[in-house]
Length: 285
Ligand code: NDP
Image 1 (cartoon, rainbow, N blue to C red):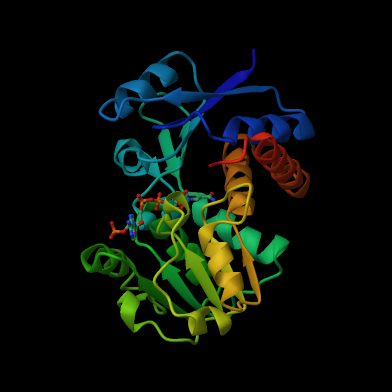
Image 2 (image 1 turned 180 degrees about the vertical axis):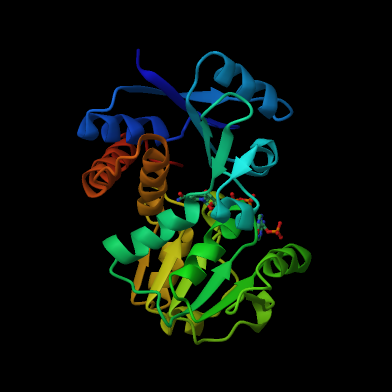
């Protein structure tokens, strides 16, 4: 019988994870089923336990449940513990063995290094946002050698809470208010959801013009608001988070099955599918 996995979230109907894991399974010859679970906002734990008790082997966790998953897991990887957020659950031995990991940051770092050829060692990084995704990427960005990491966010309190979590590291993130950000960053990472709102971020053009790469965690068929803004301001390169999505999925796949799938063909297929869906949409008025 195939092992069962799913992505759990709210909303979850647009998640690409089932398509990604189906392609990984075909590549590696691993027999699995992968579905979607829409959990009520106040019913995460019940939905997880129902799935596990019915024989489920693991879950990907998406918005808004990554902190609930962290709280529920009996054991956590070091990177999940540092982030305080879990996006991957593995049920090794019922409730006692529920293990949580966070693969978001590893996914970002791999996409930057492998697909975009951006070496983080010694670089200055500006991170916009201090939510669940931002928490997950800080540790891996520092582990990959970022020499400076500035966090800017709408709410100062949330940014300071994030910075505080990493205060004991030799190179640790610092908070700078958005209106005090000046040029001097090699990489700008957008994790404040501007793509969902289709809005620019409050940064001066000079900050983009001085950067080598602008990377939006959000992804879409057409260039996101942040990607458009970065390009218009003269940033050398701008990309969205589709590659990160595929890479974080590959990390989860590895955590569950011990096999590393090839991500590039899956990334290309997904990009083409997104573009085809976009082309079929009636023009908006
Ligand atoms: P959260 O809801 O946890 O965090 C939201 C962040 O956005 C906070 O920093 C919040 O600021 C900021 N924010 C929200 N509304 C506004 C606003 N109106 N103006 C300015 N800032 C605002 O979301 P996540 O961290 O989970 O997700 C962030 C982005 O990353 C999303 O676009 C998501 O799609 C993407 N993502 C992509 C992944 C991938 O694999 N490609 C994986 C995970 C996420 P404040 O603290 O002030 O409230």
